[in-house]
Length: 136
Image (cartoon, rainbow, N blue to C red; front, side, top):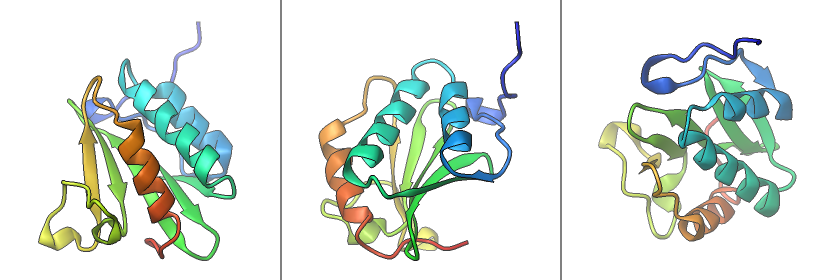
């Protein structure tokens, strides 16, 4: 039986840097337990709402963006939640709850087991894809 990617702190999969669908799919497939459901939910909504979205894995996290717009969303596994960061989150309505002044203008939603709110994510993703995001 083949071993999957190494899980880092909080169960975050160690996936090599890459562009396109394949590294994002590899990350989601390696997400442990209930966290994988959140990754699949985010990917499904991005595919539905922003079919032209670009995809990449950087710093062991998947990113979604728009051509020439930068990245609008990233997810990262932490011990008890999946952190879903919207890089222009302050411009979203409603604004996701997580954030600090140091992180301006990003905001995030920490999603625990059984807490994925598809309706809220549908609104956030649709809005986030229309505004300039983060360019590393």
